[in-house]
Image (tube, rainbow, N blue to C red; front, side):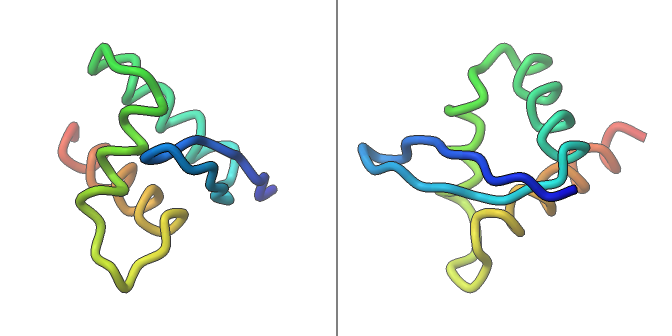
Amino acid sequence: MIRKYSTTLHGHRTSFSLEEEFHSALRAIADRRGQSLASLIAAVDETRDESMNLSSALRVFVLRTLKADV
């Protein structure tokens, strides 16, 4: 099930929608890296292609990170 989440990026509130599995994986990646979930989301946001929305960018980031760990 897709759920809506909120965070603050560059001083502005924004929201994104993710399946719980992706959000859980994102939290695990942040924990492994020793960073907050908010800072990880901000880093993904700063490096994403402008044509991709934040939700999609987060899913692709999780997928790429998990594939790199295999």
